[in-house]
Length: 444
Ligand SMILES: NC(=O)c1ccc[n+]([C@@H]2O[C@H](COP(=O)([O-])OP(=O)(O)OC[C@H]3O[C@@H](n4cnc5c(N)ncnc54)[C@H](O)[C@@H]3O)[C@@H](O)[C@H]2O)c1
Image 1 (tube, rainbow, N blue to C red):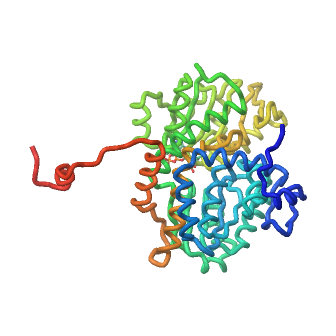
Image 2: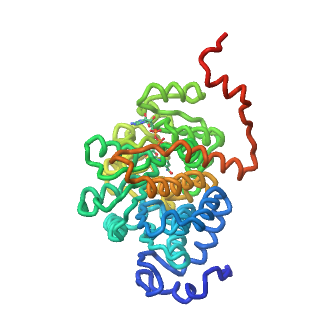
Image 3: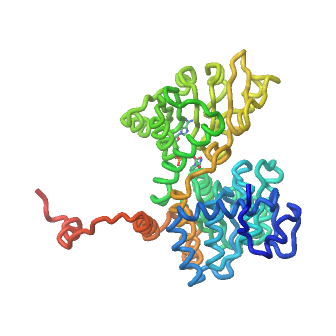
């Protein structure tokens, strides 16, 4: 394939250098191959077309430089959409460094482009082992960030547990996902959280769309790219009917699958039932299903007792944040040595003659085997990230060491701008209506 020369001439000279080289004109980095940068730039620009809200923010940031001189350390999935967020923060004047929030979600061409074209310090290699993952987190921590930007709380956790001497200089942080927010709230409850954090996940323009429609679509995409199985007529079990589970369930139903839900909370269980899904226990589902997808943020949701009941050919995958929703250690023990890779990203475990499959080592399937959420949905999530970074840069000295929701005016503004970008007008209340909804006197 011919490559369009999208790199600046200076970057073209250096982009073929060895992956680990701290080449003079490039920021510190550790990526697989800088030669992939041109492809990365093309894909980042493609994503940018679907991110009009973030683009508007970037243009304003270029003019106003609200993050001037601020060091931001980010631990996020290294995808095309994240690259556009990094560009936005840099346009605002921030010095940004980035590492991956999952060893399998990195897009190596994007990592290369961030370094070679956009001059952003990036430490991420798809498939990196645990030691490399933590070395990369430490590389970001080494830049002495004043604002942290996390997806899953690993950077904040590292700073608190292993680098407490740095905490004093950190003004604030932001957090992208449900699991990270849960960890941060636990830290705050323990009195351990040393700086304020804005929970971007709690914005309605984040979880209503990203967790639901983004994960819903990209989980279907991940399962299909990994397995190419026919979904119509297949029995699909979704564990967890939160924002992510709802999205996955509705998208699999749309593909013609029969969908069952497992839950531990009564309210989402009733919601699933009234949304028209079958609700059953994990043990009942194990014997019933063909495909199993976890989306709980919990531990060992599918474990020995379920593996004992699953049918030959069962496929398991996870869309929750961490790779511990499927008890892989036990599955490996049950299979003895009978484990092999049957397709790229699909491992087969033979248990008592039954072939059970796990996609992408139980890591979040939508990012590991597909490209994560479509850019149009990340537009709103990352608009919240950029505006929350600006918010904490301006207001950190008025915030306590707690977990904050995204301010309502940011959330509404992101929605308003998205509607404008989509060319959708909505109504405005008449003065009479404004008075009516604010009054308590008028009744029947
Ligand atoms: N893959 C992605 O791109 C992506 C995107 C957003 C969020 N996430 C992650 O997905 C996970 C779920 O996020 P969410 O926003 O839906 O959270 P949520 O809190 O809205 O929903 C989780 C649901 O799982 C249920 N649950 C907990 N333990 C369970 C168990 N043992 N069996 C069955 N159900 C159980 C809970 O009752 C709850 O209803 C989190 O780890 C989050 O960080 C992933």
